[in-house]
Length: 192
Image (cartoon, rainbow, N blue to C red; front, side, top):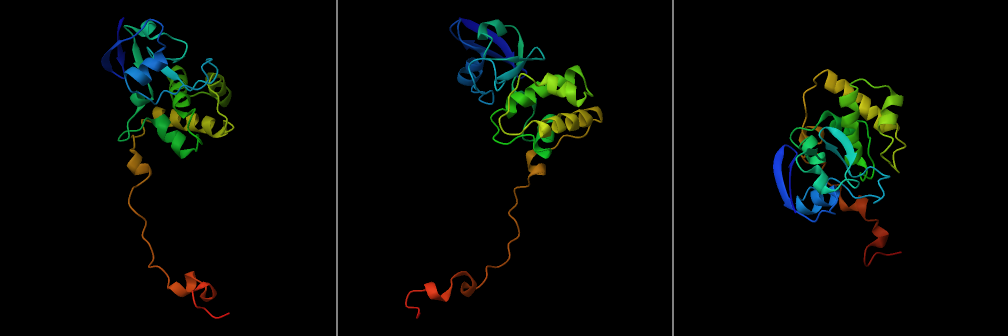
């Protein structure tokens, strides 16, 4: 069947079986691999996307159910040239470690701030309760969401990845002489 929907602000049309899950349509048909398949049981939240602006687990929705709707994936949240405040806050607050849950966590956190631009720590935790992270302990995730909320309320200018992590090589000192690197006793022909 043909499924027409809007993904990240662009019209998309895919040919798929009625049983195809939205997560697989995004990854396999549209090559939007930022939406992760984590648990296949709707427990982890790694597959979270926005459907008409509301966070949903894309492993629980058939692609056909998204027909005629607007889907926003992590790729539609921001770009390398203009990070969403949530992406920048996760970076700055170290709200990620292995990164597997990060895309779903960021998408869910964006939804939290759309509903409440200045949430308490408890409201953030409640809003993210459907997203699991095995690495961070959530403290820095909560800090990131609070920082993003403040940046969004203050209309802080967006930054690029390059601005956060310049790609210029570090200035290096000239290498030391070989004597300091290789102990003389390890040289071939060295006397003991």
